[in-house]
Image (cartoon, rainbow, N blue to C red; front, side, top):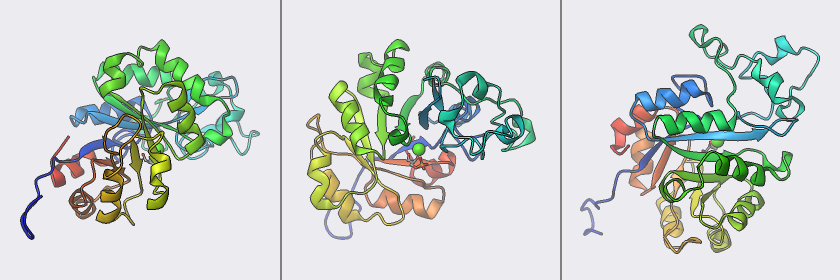
Length: 269
Ligand code: G3P
Ligand code: CA
């Protein structure tokens, strides 16, 4: 630390492309992974859910309505929950046209397909288990696919993969099955509760609006399950002023739909 008023040297935060570079390509698709790669962004974030027949797919909302043409293809299937459709049905959907005509034909990727794209681009993955309460046992399913696709080897586990969730029980289940994995809890638990989270989470990843420097410091003072200081990645930061603010709070990562804007604002990559 420096004297009062002197700048404190801290590394630029890691920039993480939220749902891929989702300001520039349809979110949670291979096109958004490639858009991030095209910007030279190493880390991508996604959201994983489970189909009716047990396949893992990458989609944010718990229904298919907003980001696909499901209402046109399957008009009688309201409210179009992900878990009420088979993988083959979801594979028929267009997950690009809602974003713009040039994206017509872009599909909802399976987790396996998504991992392949990230690997081909030599990128790293912040994998969110979305709404785990809807998909009992999804943690084991995710670990099975990660293992089958070669993502549980040392290189990936030590530097290329973080599993995060808003669900504490889900994250604890991941940690219990694979204690070597890096995990992140989404949210901002009270400072008094942080030590309990540090038993199974390496990161505390809060929304940016209410985030303070005191909170970031409180998180950093604790050590996670691997004996290292807890880290903080905050979301979803798309503007220059917000990026500069959270970087000044000392966050370790910034999750953004506009990774180029954030990188220009704070450096890092
Ligand atoms: O990575 C953090 C962020 O994705 C959490 O919120 O709703 O975009 O999944 P959400
Ligand atoms: Ca997410």
